[in-house]
Length: 118
Image (cartoon, rainbow, N blue to C red; front, side, top):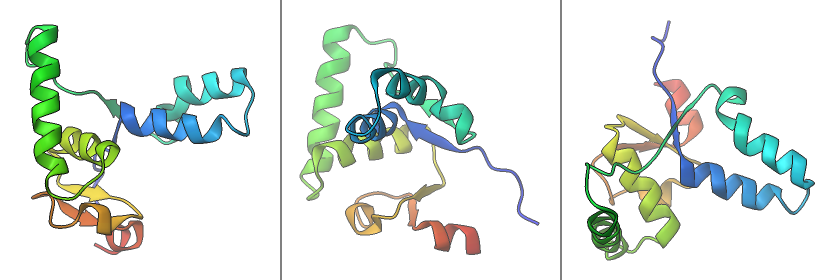
């Protein structure tokens, strides 16, 4: 039997899902999705680490690290999502879009089927 692993998603993933869902949900439903996403899917929502930097230093650092990822041929939103996964020490990065992330990180990138068969 598989041991219980902690599951994470970034705040940027939650915002992306809410943005897509907003075309079909009313304001209250989008608000509920945003506030309760982590409970519904039993996840911890993670945020970029500020490392106790000033706002200016944080933004400069985040932009710099995001740009380094972008140079590996990855789009902006994927880059910041991947950076947060690396920051929180993820062992696996589970996505249906494995091609967007493979060879752009040291994390093992798997689709959901691959992950469940491990």
